[in-house]
Image (cartoon, rainbow, N blue to C red; front, side):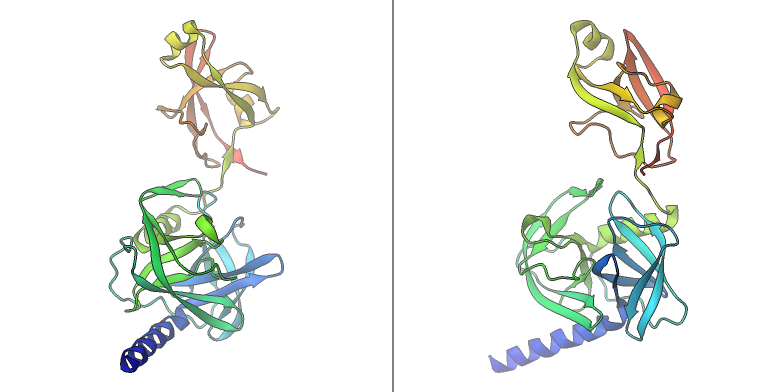
Length: 294
């Protein structure tokens, strides 16, 4: 038994050591501590509730303090890409073969984080729950999982690796209970590749006040459904007013898709959408370009 424990301990130490140069600490005045994972030389991925392109943030790497700059931020998921200043000593995370699949319950893993400027920390955990499709912010993802153990400060963005050092997921919510969960590596990489390719996505707004309503018999016949979102008010000078939307209009769908139970789907600033509306007994299609949220 002692030999087994010693071998396991040595293996865990080697795994943590293999990740040390691939993590950065992010945090400073007004920026809660979190972890970034180096995805390529000079570029780290993390999470943030808000960010601005070009915004400078303090980081700590294996070689000491440095400065990072926001290269892209996804307002739907919170994922962010941080460009590290030249000379910061980092290396992409270990190229250990990974499945990208959600690990089943009972799988032993390590949460490895650069949780504070003091250095890398690690926590041995067991996958306690493995779930199917869910949402990351406003974006659908194919799966998620949770591990046992508390939510340590600074572990947001931490790497979750197996005992061979392969990345199995990333901590994308770091609160105790069901709010703390992990995005599988495959879904995380896919989201980052899309963010890198398309650039920042900022939540959009139309400048309208809405309320769900049940339609009258005549309205339901014209709309082909029995419920809609009624425009209760329009913000002067906003995208909706410029597009011609009026109080009393009934929104039936967006870009050819019917509305779900949650109301309008996520909108991106600058990405045109077409609102299908019912005005009186007439169905219309109104193109509108969402604006950035203030």
